[in-house]
Image (tube, rainbow over all chains, first blue to last red; front, top):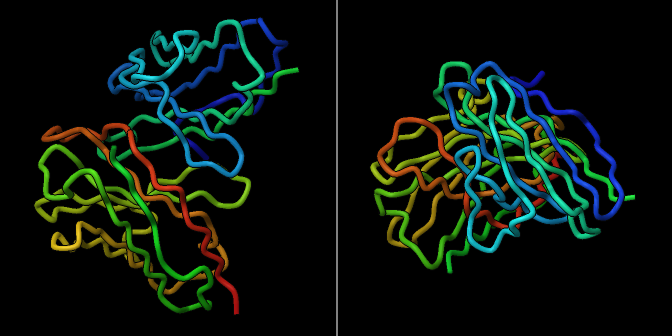
Length: 108
Length: 124
């Protein structure tokens, strides 16, 4: 089981908005991070510290936080956004990293 | 540009020891700004943090794996390594090395640079 819970799959049509959520009791106390992973590739950091975007990440990807849930929002979804997305934060003691189970984003 | 590259055997026999090395270029593992991590991904599954090391040599490991893990470094080669003992089929996974840029913070950070990953299969 995971200390961070993600919906296994989300499907959207091109141009729509995709929202991927991650829930966990630690999230009000610890930052959340988001990774995008395409098949056969290493994960890529797309959001850090809940809502900050690394350089080179498109503005259509954004992060937000509310209580025990953090959300990755992808506006104007494109075919290239189809990937697995993982949230990451800390364990219940705040000592080491934990990942959510991942969400597969399908672009219809 | 920071690059990380995993190396090691692709196949390990059950009960034996898995040994992997991560070579870092474009940055020094002796920098106090970073922690150096190992993460794995079982086939078709999610990500699992294995452990990490600070430049001082301090290490933290996933409690579920702690008794079988050693993480070490070779600063002269700018490399850090993972040793996982007594492997079973459940250790078959893609193993990644990655960098955590959290500096002196005691709280886990993110992983901003990753290696390409190496598939390790445990099989006789």
